[in-house]
Image 1 (spheres, rainbow, N blue to C red):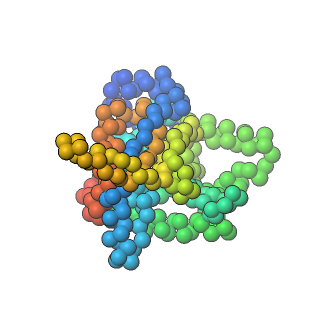
Image 2 (tube, rainbow, N blue to C red; image 1 turned 90 degrees about the horizontal axis):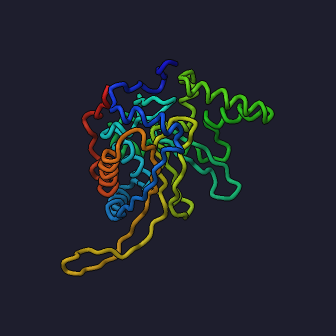
Image 3 (cartoon, one colour; image 1 turned 135 degrees about the vertical axis):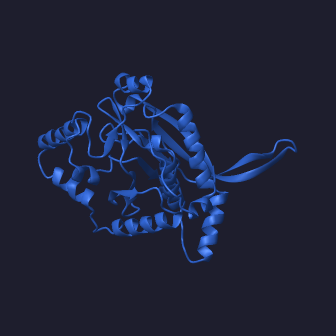
Length: 287
């Protein structure tokens, strides 16, 4: 309450225009900006093939989530969120994603949230991903988030509305307990969905007004496209690409910072070997 939260610290020394914008665009769906990012798969494929020869099986999702954590660690303004007209910097780096327990129409799905220090290597992220996916893909498995959802929905519809409304009010005013925030996939630095896993193209997924997610990414299936290799020699080739659909809250930082940050993000994905080495420390946000 009064600008204090369990999951973040209010930023007071901020540009006056950036401080005003959350009062003009009061909801995240007011402030959503959408853009596609095409990623050359060559670097990922070469990295995955090399590691496979060593007996380790990486996926595109491992690489992209590692790139998310690394980018948030080096570009800290991306780890901000807006709540009740105020700008906050998050205490930790968190990435949420959905796991489908069974690839069929009636298969259940669950949400997983991973915490990062930002100092992890790609190998560390791969191990974390493998552990969580194995724990959550069994049809009989339930995590704490599933259990909370079941508790909230064991009552009549009117009571559900009241409880959810109460949680939203508490969240808005900084009264939501950290125990609930830790279980909520909506209170996260970034949410990502893997449309490739169900053979679909990327989408522009909306940002949730509940919670604190400022960035939503959607990875589509790979495709082949003719590209200009050398414009001077008129050489055209074919590249394997994937597109990531990004939806961002424009209120947390300016367009130049976003642009430079996503160029870094793309660099990490297309050159995953960079992430075999940990960074020494995270870049800190302003006070």
